[in-house]
Length: 437
Image (cartoon, rainbow, N blue to C red; front, side, top):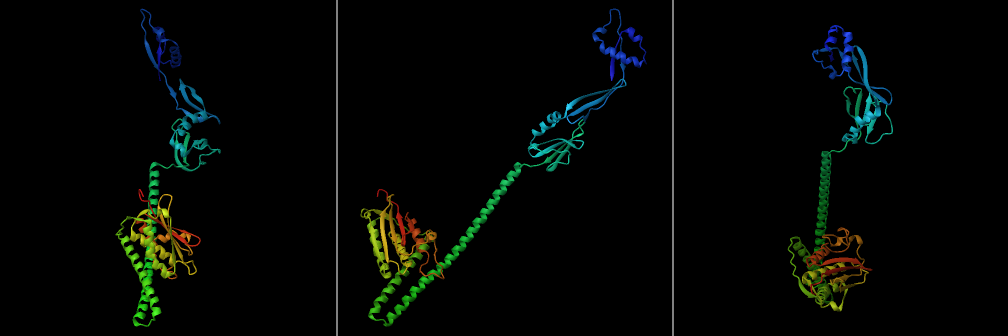
C-alpha cells in the first residue's frame, strides 16, 4: 500500500534511496507529524517524496473458541511483521441476532425446524414448538430434509439445515379441498336422490300392482255374486222369501261397485289435475242430513247403526264445501269403518260435529273396532297404501279411499286426521272458519 512521507529539503537530501530500513521509521515519523507543520518557511522550498512499501491483509476467518464464544480474526503483514486483528463474539448472541431472529420472522418457521451446524456438529436448533431434547449431530433432525445452505465466508463453516415438520395447506390446496368436498357432497346427494327415486318408483310399481289386484278382486267378487243371484231370480228357482234377500244383496253389491268406480274415476281426475271442486256455503245441519241420507243404506246392509250428534248452536253455521266431495269423504269414512270392524265389535258408528277453539268446524266419524297401529296412522292416507299383504289380506279395499279423502279435503281447504280411541278409531274432517261466519 502507498505511504506518503513528508520531509523538508535537508531531511530528504540525507536519505538514501535504497535505505528501506529507515523508510519505515520515516513513515512512522510522517504519521506522527501533523501536515500543518510541514509548511515551508519563507525563502525555503518543500519537496514531497512518495515512498512505497508492501503490506498484506488476509481474509477474515470465523472459528469456535470454546462452548460460548466465536472468534472472528484476520492476519495482517506490515513491513514484514505479522499482526492479528479480530474480535471475540458470543456464540449464542451471534446466532440469535443474525440467524434466529430472521428465521422466526419468516413463514417457513411455522412448518419447519432449523439446525445450525458448525463443521457437521449442531450448535443450535430452532422450531415453532420449543424442543426439550438436544442434538449433537446434523443427522439428528426430525421430518424430511427441505434445504441445506452453507453461509458465505468468513462463516462458511456454519451450515443451515431446514427440515419439514408440518407443511401448511396453501390457498390452492384449500380451494381444491373445498371443491372436492362440494363435488363429493353433490355426488353423494345425487346418488341418494337417485336411490330414493328408484326406491320410490319400485314402491309405486308394487303399489300399482297391488291396486290392480285389489280392483280386480273388488270387481270380480261382487260381479260374480250379482250374476249368480240374477240367474237364480231369472230362472225362477228362488222362493218369494229368498227373492227379497237376493234383491237386497244385488242392490248392496251394485252400490259397492258404484263407490269403487267413483273412487277410481276421482283418482283419474286428480292424477290429471282435472279435479272440479265448487265450494259454496252450506249449513252444518244440511251436511249432517245429507250424510245420513247417503249412508243409511250402506249402514243398514252391514247391520250398523249411525249415531249422529252436533252442538245445537252450530247447526246453522255455514261451511264452504263441495257437497259431492263431502259426501264421498263421508262414504269412504263409513266404508273404512265397516270393513275393518271385527265380527264381535260393537256395530255402531258415531257421526259428530263440533266447533274448535279456532272456530273451525270438525266432523268426526268414530267406530268401535280394533283401531289403527301408530306407525300406520300417516301412511293410511298415502295412495295405494294397505296395511295388509294382497295375498294374505282378509279385508276388502283398494288402498285409494283414504288417499282420495285426503286429496278432496285439501281441495276444499280442509284437512283430515285420525286418532285411536278406546276402543276403535276416530277419523276427523276439519274445515276452516268462514270469514264473518
